[in-house]
Length: 123
Image (cartoon, rainbow, N blue to C red; front, side, top):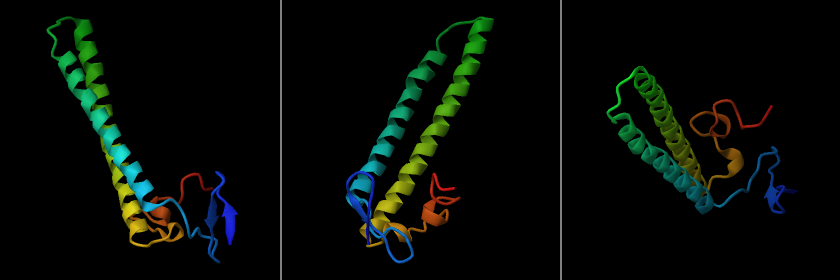
């Protein structure tokens, strides 16, 4: 049984209501690769920030600036890890699809759909 996917494409659903078709594995793998590239771009921003922190500047303002910059660098490192984790999850989903799995049967490491609390946006 088919159902419009919203973009003009058709998605098939099994008798249990789960999708039996979805994006091609290669397209999902491209998303994983792009996420890794974004993580690399974020990581690349840290070097210039580190260089700014080493500028010889001594004053109370300089100390406050360096403390704030350290917080920014820590947040950026956390963002890099999160994007890398997302890339890994998307890559695992691509591998699952490439092995013949269907989108509606994906039960990744976190549970339903690979997400710890079910599908994003679901009530």
